[in-house]
Length: 242
Image 1: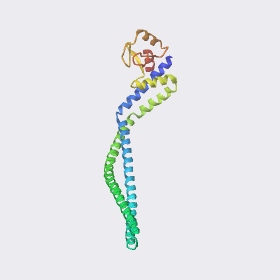
Image 2 (image 1 turned 30 degrees about the vertical axis):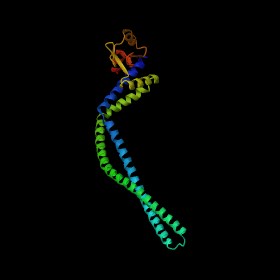
Image 3 (image 1 turned 90 degrees about the vertical axis):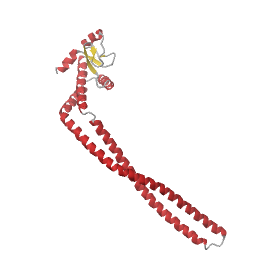
Image 4 (image 1 turned 90 degrees about the horizontal axis):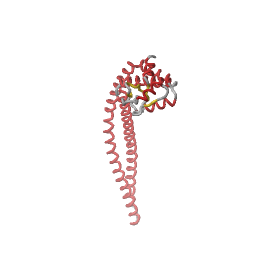
């Protein structure tokens, strides 16, 4: 058990070091990710607008051809009206002319609505270009800042990550699951020492009997207030001495 506690505290020390390095980066990683997401959204919106405009042009051309065909049909029917011999035939041609004209009117109204949407889409498309350029420029700057910070601490971070890998394979899987669960719930601090008979995480007083048991290093003890894993001075000193 003493070795299990020592490994867990060692892992906490390494993770705390990695947390400190991450804190030095500030919100740069978040800003970079946010800018990348916004650029992706803008690119997607631009493509959708371009596709809509392109499809609308194809639709408009097809409707123009249909309207020309309908007008030619109307002229043909009008010519036929002068040749018919009965009112019934004349009325039938009139209905065909009216139907063709109604369809022309309907198509023209539909295209007016589409043209209005195309105008708005073109205006939105014009705005996206400058927005994208601005976002890409900011992303480039933020990436450069983050790369500089990463480079400054690259060696130290690699060392800590290597140490972490070596520790994780030696830790009991059940202990590791418990550690990860507590660490996630308690702002990164899962294993803490007892200082002046108080928990090093929540600073609540530890009962004397618990302190005595803790010094024996024979079982895993969690703070009854915050749930963090507690370790004795002996464990802390043995890890510091390595």
